Image (tube, rainbow, N blue to C red; front, side):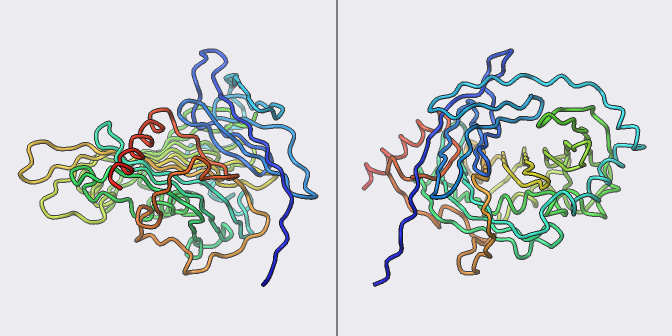
Length: 396
């Protein structure tokens, strides 16, 4: 028998809400960090962060809150926090005159990828959630703690991988609701959506001339001015392009945020992008495919921080009276940047052909996540989880 020693550690749990100082409205997707540990606020501005201290480690004594368009704010760690972020006042910087056009800014940012992003392999711990709705009814909720391994940013994504470390699922198993709608490769979302590493998503060289580039002014992030550049598809390609808004640090030219919306002007092409397999008798009408990708800088290196993906579509089955509107929302947040990068073994890697629902089990326990950090569910999602729990228990 082999006995491994336990590493002594204590955990501090911090909960709170982040609001706008002027309007007092809750602020979603605010980055909340304590050193390498972090999370984001949910749509109601709420967050919970668990900060562990292992033996011989120094724990951060404050939290940092950051969001595009607002001034950064720090707060001492306490059990309950209410933070009001102050909108940033932006004055137009003269540095923009260095570039002849908005396209020049984007191309300059691309040229800086090797110096702004990690040239060493990095391991991340993260939380992933995907939620499916039929009209306004939640029909499936899957969540997981994942480990993500990314090779250096000057290498292709071929060897990047994600592994599920723990997960749970809840589903309304009525046949009329499930519709066999399953999101393929869900936890691989951060690998696909990382526009810096996966350049084919937005910065494929042959596609660059197919966009119009417009300068949309400036925004503040981390007390730093950012160029805002809008990319609009103009040329025709055999596949759908994205309408994109990029937030680019004026000093380093690192991309701090990217908002992408699939061009829906050609529905047939958009459908081929979103739909892996069309069952017989199904008429599929897409209405939205969007990505919101956030990065944050640690020292001189910019890391992926948060990804949100939304898909909306209508399914009309042959000989059925009414069509159904579906929404699939998935999000991923990096909760810890691991100091040592260990490749994920092939047998542990989550493949793009898989879906999360078939790889995790239903689990009903209030302390299921333990010391792991997650994105807090919203109140509507909490109510949906409770309803699905009751449904599953009644069927057992």
